[in-house]
Length: 289
Image 1 (spheres, rainbow, N blue to C red):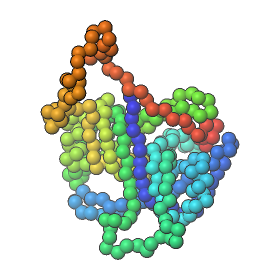
Image 2 (cartoon, rainbow, N blue to C red):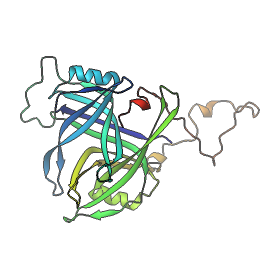
Image 3 (cartoon, rainbow, N blue to C red):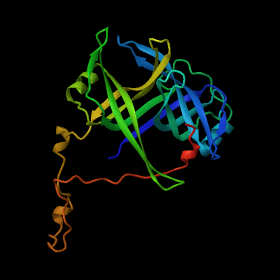
Image 4 (cartoon, rainbow, N blue to C red):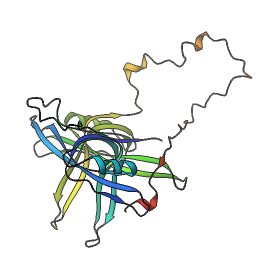
């Protein structure tokens, strides 16, 4: 079963780039991007905000970022969400941080520098923050109501990344777990029909929240605030009238003798689709954790 985990953002680098070398000789750097955005409050008011995102770039992409990006540069990043977990050496508590692993990077500034900020043109200026995932719901959805009366639902969605290690040739797999937050009518509808194990598509913006524990420690969580969510593998009345078990050309063909016909797949056995494979440029020895 194949899943999907992709983030596209346009943001501004907040500080100078530092490129590091792993023990295996691979370049790696962390971009720290600020992404302005607008959102609708619980009261329906349009507000402005900004999010901060850590993007890790490897290999030649890291070298290019170190050479051509500087503080203030605008850049497009397409990548995947990855959450790293570890145990705090002092407290023993489990900690985690979600970042974006860059797969594509486009530098957006003209050679002669950025244009000045546009006045009265909010719709065509600013940045982009969009995450799309296709995965399976990991727990039974539970609808909650905020103190202001808004309904909210958090879906746990799991995705899997599969690849072939370039150094060893071994097949690798990593699971990622995403919290997808739904509000209002979208939350209400999904709570009625979504079940643990169901497959779902979710699209929205990446948001990181912070809070303090009872001991005074600061904690962070990264979520996808959904704008669109669709349950998958569900038939739709509008599509059923246009679905046929035979192609138009098939009805015109002469019957194929039984001895030459290929065996039809059994209807009671699911057919496994092939999983795409790709080679990783990063070996296990290169990972800094």
